[in-house]
Amino acid sequence: MDTQQRRLNILERYDWVVWAILALLGVLMGVSDMLTGGRTYASGEAVLFEGITGMTWDQLQVAEPGAARFIDFQVRSGGGWILFSGLLTITIAVLGLRRGQRWAWLLMWLVVPLSIGLTLIVLLSTEKVPGAGVPGPLIGQTIFLVITVGLLLLTYRKYNPSN
Image 1 (cartoon, rainbow, N blue to C red):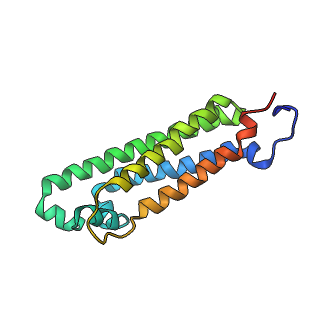
Image 2: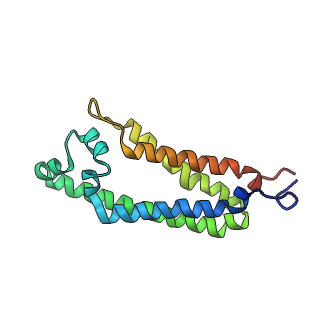
Image 3: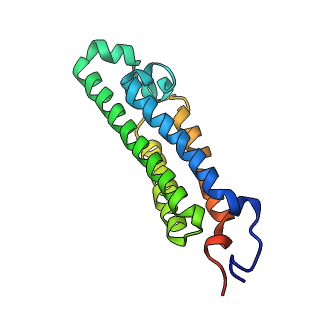
């Protein structure tokens, strides 16, 4: 029975709202990175930075100001991509998922879990100094990955009705 013949559960009816909220969080993170730049490594992501470089953000700024400026640029640029991905996800949710379009559900697999998964692979494969702590982004991205994959799996029947 297809989605027109069976009653959708609450998650299937409002999955697009959940996606829009998750994407809005991404937009806010992107804006934050664009505004904060490399200074993010002096606070929330200090464990990540010190685990990879072996020094604090302040130490890098003094020792290698050019490298610090480049990292600042990279963080701001990455924030722009996070912002763009969030806006793209909101667009897909509102224009596709809200209408029950299968293409939108398939595209969500590429836009969100695949991109998060690739980021996690890079993060986990990056060489770190001995004794480095667990970086916050690893925990946050893993939670986000579990939520998004779970949401996609739980809405499978809506977008893939059996004939």
